[in-house]
Image 1 (cartoon, rainbow, N blue to C red):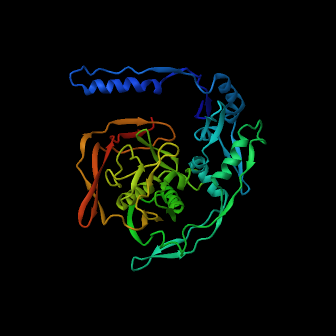
Image 2: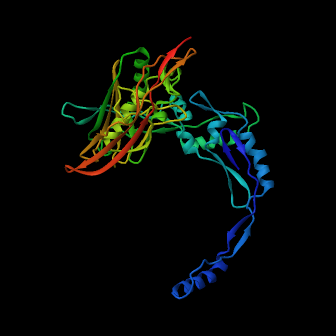
Image 3: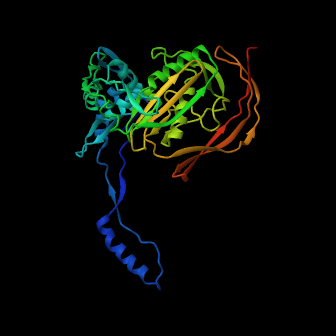
Length: 421
């Protein structure tokens, strides 16, 4: 039995076949001896098997479906944190719920509270609901040294244990009141302070990148808001940083406005347009910091203000930008935006002396077509060829190349789009 896309699914138990290990020892031994005799034919060895009955039967599966799985997926649960009500729907819950054999042939519910807590659909609202710890703010002085610009302070935060303890009992509630519960918080000290900044290894500028863009009101708002949410991010060693988890859903409630995005190969208006400029800037700061990309994706067609093959877009619920901090030291992310540019800087300790980008030529070039669009979301579009491009990330230590990675990107042609009759 499992959960997927907000629904519970039951799988009928089936008798299986397994290897009879004890009875297989003698045939294996005899087969080995035959193989050692070079004059004998070396054929396959037949091993005995036995029927294996499922540990969880159909009656138990039906019970778990009726008593837990179906009620769990019947409606959202509502969590109350710091006076704020946060609904969590079945589609989100189903990603982190499971039913497991307890060893006695009974299915017991299990919630991956750690994954649920990190889920972008919940992480953003939880961050807004409670004043979590405030990390110290860092800066580079005139000599390029890292110093503390503003000290951090303690806050309150939902833990994995508290979230799991609150959510599981609500899943079998029959009505909205029974599916609503308070989530406890606990005091959490900031990880970054004037006392810990050196211990964490945040001593120098590791990388920095700037993307420039044409001024537009929606870009100024959305890029500025994303930069505000990213600024001050602390990524400890071996942690994975997520754009979607950090910035949250690009909604009006989260401070974003409508702008241009790319959907199905053409521009259209949607909330959060322009945020990909920030994603591209973070991608390049990550690229030149030499840390490990975990998830990223380029735009469907090439946008001239970005480096070919070194850019990224994001989409809530389908595409994230994530990197793992494998530098061995903590990383601190500075984000600054103006009306015409956004800059992302990583502070920490350099793992490599230098990281270089070597871009290859355009290949497999394809010409754009012309098509008409319609509807209120249609935006005119100028043509641009599609092409393949490869970019090598070259890692340098002691003046010598020590590693090289190749990133390949395929851009589709950007068709000419006209709107209207």
